[in-house]
Image (cartoon, rainbow, N blue to C red):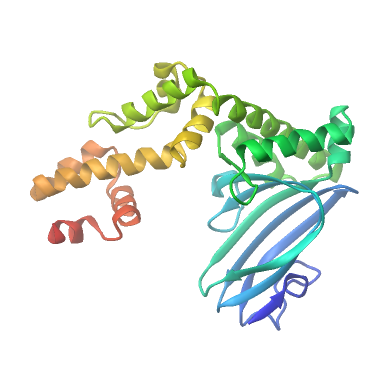
Length: 295
């Protein structure tokens, strides 16, 4: 089935009745200022569909989640991209796919006016960052940090005047620009990378306790923001996810050696029973009970 995103939602942001057999979800688009927009979108496919979408030129600061984004805790990652011109294209959603996005778009000229710089300076800066830090799709990825969460929470909870919401968005954008600068430094600083690899080694030791980012950052000589951003850079995943995987892999090795000691292994892992099973299924695709039978 082929659909155009312009035909998916009604004026209230709900999926149109005629599209409901294929898609469900919602969309809220706020034009706060002429060149500043905020989008909160959630889409679930009920069948295989091809969606045509148009994107205006500008700077995009995107926050992705696995389900509806109602709080900052629902966000898994951050993507930053610069789109120099309007584009359009198709993307596919298989039956059961879920797509959640909180996104702000701002024009380089608008951001330049806010920062007191020229539009060319802003464009050149983000193009340089894109070329240096972007992936094959020219998208720069950042992890979610505590500072990012604190900046997003008032945006999602906002119910007042649009001008105050614009202020919250500016604050968030400034934080992400600072994080880009930090990411750029970490990508070329050998001393910082050595500290990040040390953090990775500490996490992988069997005796490593429940993750405490503040304590780990102090151990390796970085601040918490640099640790979170740098770890995602060198390992390719957020530090929390990596730590969970490391602890579950260690627990699995213990289960193979002593299948009858599950209660002790769970307690030692720092997870509750439910957390342990959820992490086990996510990593191995089977429950710990099934894993014991297989191995």
